[in-house]
Length: 93
Image 1: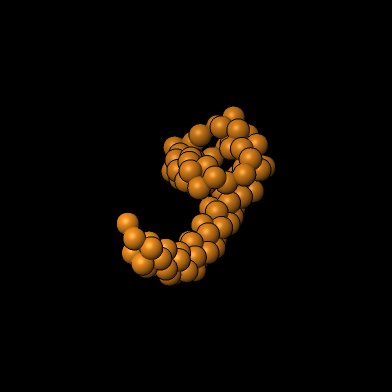
Image 2 (image 1 turned 45 degrees about the horizontal axis):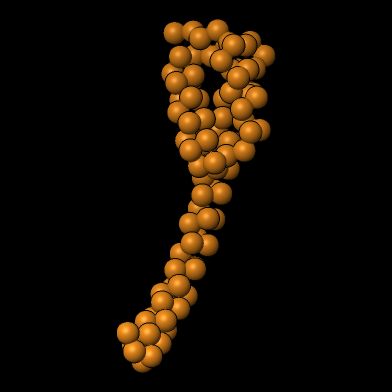
């Protein structure tokens, strides 16, 4: 590869990286927003049922799906404690 081809390749690579940076930043912001929504919905379900320590089956199934999505997106361990507690509750149909 000659110098001219190499410098053209490097220039193209830099331009491509410049175009990708805003996309990465936006994706990061979207991910944080999704984590916030998932955590908020899990907390809503948790506080709605905490006093009775029982949860309807459809709410429990939804809670598990929310938790799995939260952990897939690398959500922190704050929700782990709540998830473990909800697992000890009675599930009513």
